[in-house]
Amino acid sequence: MLTLYYSRIDSPVGPLLLAMSDCGLAILAFGHELPDRLGGEKIDWQESDEACATVRQQLEEYFAGRRREFTVLLDLRGTDFQKDCWEELLRIPYGETRSYAEVAKAVGRPTAYRAVGQSNHRNPVAIIIPCHRVLAGGRALGGYGGGLLTKGFLLRLEGAKFRDDSAMERQQPALAFS
Image (cartoon, rainbow, N blue to C red; front, side):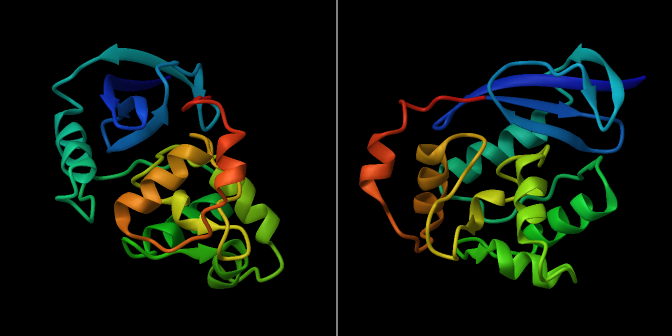
């Protein structure tokens, strides 16, 4: 059984769940829901604002525009391909974007852009592993677990260039998180 120490915070993009293992940040998710499992392991949840204090501080600095890189240790649990994709996302500089095809090529699987999308969907550490920096066709918002309004907010915060399809955004409910 995996022990995770968790904290919940409010942010400009809504509530966030933070969870630390003994090895590093294992979950940064939109909303407050505590999942039953991570990487197939059952979770023993222990509330601890103290264990999550560094992550909380770095997120506050990021949202205030004072942090461009995160320095918290990560404890990533997924398949080798997912981990390769997540590591590649960490290489995308603040304020820059990539297409799904560019990420697929960078991880040595140039035709696996849909699998890259699925890896992004399963990203357990939102924002810090910046899947919001991956755009459909390298220009459009595409999908995002926190919603397209959140993805647009994060990209604007970072000063990234992307196609701002306002009609698409108007169809989104006000910051719905899943």
